[in-house]
Amino acid sequence: MIQLIVSVMLYFIIFFGIAFILNMLLRRTWLMAFLYPFIIVMIIDNISTLEYFTNTGDAFAKLLSEITSLAVADVIILLSGLAGAIVSGMVIKFLRKSGYQMF
Image 1 (cartoon, rainbow, N blue to C red):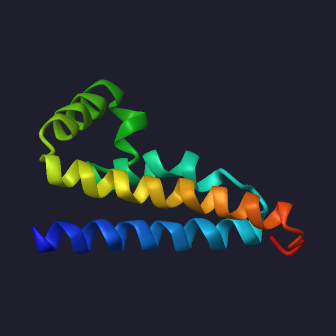
Image 2 (image 1 turned 90 degrees about the vertical axis):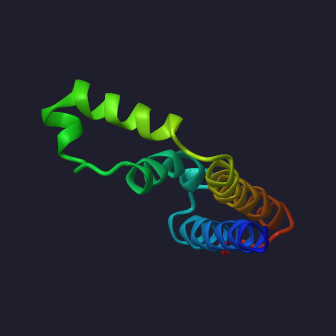
């Protein structure tokens, strides 16, 4: 249980930080929130990304089976990373409205 709490906090903070830095550098508020599913696919699947282009049907079938076999704790951890990316976008929008032009 403690590992789940620490993992949730860690994923939230890591993806909040990565999204915040990307938002500052690229000035795209929701970029990380859109890229997050692709990052999760790279974390979850056990196949090469090139295989999605060369052997599409089998690659997506393997991905679907990997997603459906995730445990509840894994889904909670991965969703906390998405929440971190979304909260980062909201913080950046708030800072821009508050007059911080560097964001």
